[in-house]
Structure formats: structure tokens, C-alpha cells
Image (cartoon, rainbow, N blue to C red; front, top):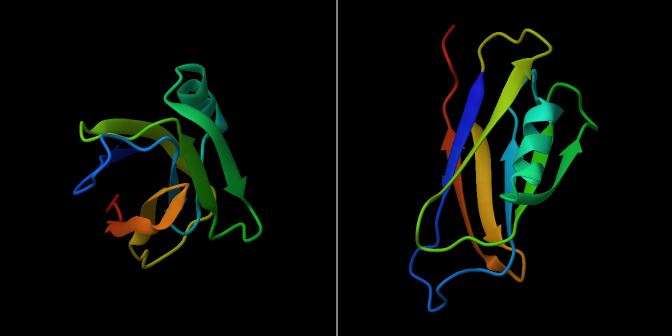
Length: 114
């Protein structure tokens, strides 16, 4: 399954951020595929990523982007189901400027019916 994220800067006095972070709560039981994350880094879109695997059923992914501007930035990576979980709930994605944590915005992404 591919997770698509679109990020852009809204209502800012700056034309772009110098460094942005996307914190993505994985759907319960899902994990990002590192090969697809490595491809984002190799392509220059993402500078670094970190997967918090403290809780195997509820992982978090942090993506660091060089820049986010007013033009939408499309990010897509593969996720896979490692543990079957019934009654999946939506998960959250937060985008913030790494130098201004108060500038963040949070949204949810829906679950997928298989």
C-alpha cells in the first residue's frame, strides 16, 4: 500500500521553510517500507527519516524535508501490514517548521478497507 502526503506552506510571511518535519503516526499494525524511504532520501526530497519502533503495533515515522514552500510537495512511500488489527482507527500526520514548533498543523488520514 502506498501512503501519499501533500505538504505546503500556508499563510506565512516566509516563501518557504528551511527545514520541515512530518511526523506520521502509522496505522496500527503497519510499518513503513525502508526501501521506499531510502528512495525519498536518494531523490533529495527527504534529508533524513527516523522510525520509532518502541511499540511494534503503533509506530511513528519522522521525515525531515529540506524545504516546504507554497507549492505543494508530494511525498509517497510504501507501508506494509505486519500485524493484523481489527477496527483500525485513523492516524495523525503533523507538519511543522523545525525552527518554529508552534507553526505546525495536524490532520488525520483515514483507514483503508481491504
